[in-house]
Length: 356
Image (cartoon, rainbow, N blue to C red; front, side, top):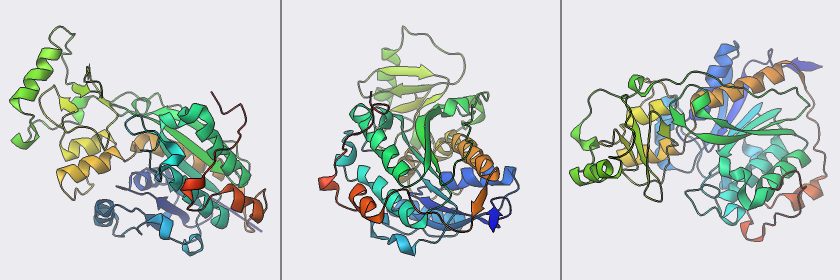
């Protein structure tokens, strides 16, 4: 006996490293467009600010540290979502990869997949994951997921191509327990102008000091000026870029790294809009907390397109009631997935197709 994804009511999701809940909103949009009924059976985030704002918006408080949650206690689900922490691979971090404890959180995803065997998963991370350690880190991740019995696909997508005025390039990794004809979304949507997202009047709190504004202006006096609204981005080297869209918003960037027309910081609502959050989304917490959470969140239209493509692929198949076993033995899995032992993680040999 089989149950098709369309007939399963509801479609069960878990939301790991959930943050603001951007993955959840994106998946809800994709489900609504396909007349599917999503059910959120589990969420987790170690950040207390994330827990509070997630509860304020969805009525559920996420579990805390996922490393302390036994995988057998997580409810059965159909799709696992995880924007696992990116600082270990990010250009703005130290890029220590699996040597950074945040990088090893991928293995918590792997242990959950090993036991729960959901039909599909969607993972998201910074684009630098592709080239980290000459491609070996991504190769190791794909290898582990494939050894768990999943068809694995990955691609780098840019939020600019999905209607948002933010240049946010992220790698997406999707997996299917059964072979599926997955097709990546192409994007190609026109970019919304900043004028539609930025507030016409803001409090003086958001304005940079006169000295900072003057320094920004002096550094770009000889450069081309846009007639439309722009965002001025100061990178790690101190260089200023001026564009009619935002650079990728970051959690750990300097306080004034991104200024509207070189004058003021983005408001909390503007930051959320640049990630595609609806205006109904409840803001909770201080400015610094919101900057951190929004910088760590996802571009909702981009994620929604990926989630929609995953749902379309699953709709074309039937899900067996019996959960198939992984392609490797339990003993091999124990040696493949270093459960909470980051100090002894070895990338091992990977196929040359993943290395650069």
